[in-house]
Image (cartoon, rainbow, N blue to C red):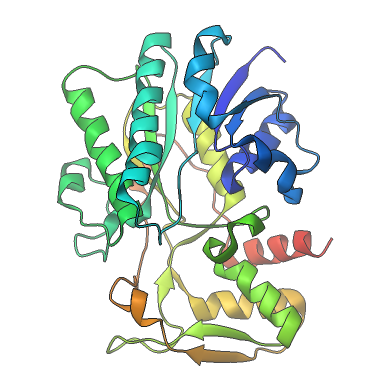
Length: 320
């Protein structure tokens, strides 16, 4: 293994699966995250994380590290319910800014995770038009933090201070194996899987919006394996620059998702609709769908997994 990638958030859901993919490709990893997470999260057992660095010690240790081939920055607070703006500024904005500057210094690609949460209620649509980014209005502090960094990155580039190769990705609804540690922030697929096995049924939020039926709320659900393939593409090509959507480009309903989980478990659908909590009702997204033309224009042509097939593969791995 001669090539090495520095991966932040390496003990997280997408980060761990990305490091797992590095193992499969014969690429070494420098894995950055809270050290205890690597042992606590049993879904990560068997992954070779390489050199592990606690996230709070990274910048002190960077000068002594061999220069990686790329930085894959997936480390962040991804809790959409987090309200501590100062904490989000430190971990989601300032940390990213320091890595951006490191990649300028080392002349290596910088690939980072933005979020579809930056689109807010979608009043400006879901096109990854960079000219529209400053107009977006996220619905929560997490989305704000991702938006702040995106705007900052574009301003830095305009002022001539950007890595030679850099790309950010607005992740839509990512699902797949390795997310159980996320608890309430895990995908609806995992929650449905657990509920069905425990009670033979599952719960979905009612619709509180005229014209949209219960369970007809739509999301762009994307399998973690597809996300990982795009990240490899961005780093290997490498993409010259830009902020891109990362979804399938095809929104499906929560009812579609529920039926896919029941089918994967070989169980008859049994769905109960419950009120959306008042605390999140006015911030609830009823539709998200990534426009994917810009990534395709970069040459990415791999097909994304259908929700039914992706759910069946995920449930299959959960049942092993």
